[in-house]
Length: 294
Picture (tube, rainbow, N blue to C red):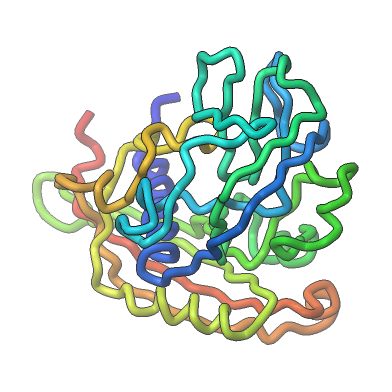
């Protein structure tokens, strides 16, 4: 199937929200010397490659080549394997792919399963996910791990595929085309919900305030597959900055409204979320389109 308009919205909104948290909110944790441990659990690994996991999910991707650029955060371009620096590469005999989403490094199988792999990887203070779960399914039936939680240090569990909080979860609630002008012009409205789950009230209130203040801003509308990331959430061109990536973009979506609310809970949901803080940010995005022109 060809990518559709709603695919563009989700991709564009994700990249915008990720940048809003990292660059505007400065929601990052730096100075972390990550030591990666081999694990055969978790997310898909390409043939002839091994996965080494860190204790964190997700790595920060927005920054410069050194700590004086852009956000003041240096984004590593490779890892140390047995003390030797290996840049991210898809062709070297010791091919390295940095999977920023899952906090892991993929290496060619000739590296083996016992290599010492490390690097200075800053991580997001608040992770960013796209989810198809509705709010009830997300809050009641999903397992959450606090970033850096000690149980991940067990090599038998490093690759566990779990949502890691603090995080925001983006889902599209509904979309509509409303007649706007003669000639077939519609106003397309997209309602997106961001579920915010943290382990403290400071991050919850800060995240909701950060996005509440985006009402009446515009965000660049990118193609459905127009992304700085490769298939394993590796940065295609390091360093990456969202502002640089979207510079020159001419299509924009307007943020008509933003409403926030704090989850009060009750019953099974409160029990399931013990020790967690939950809020909702509801966005209304609008754009003038001619959707019936093929």
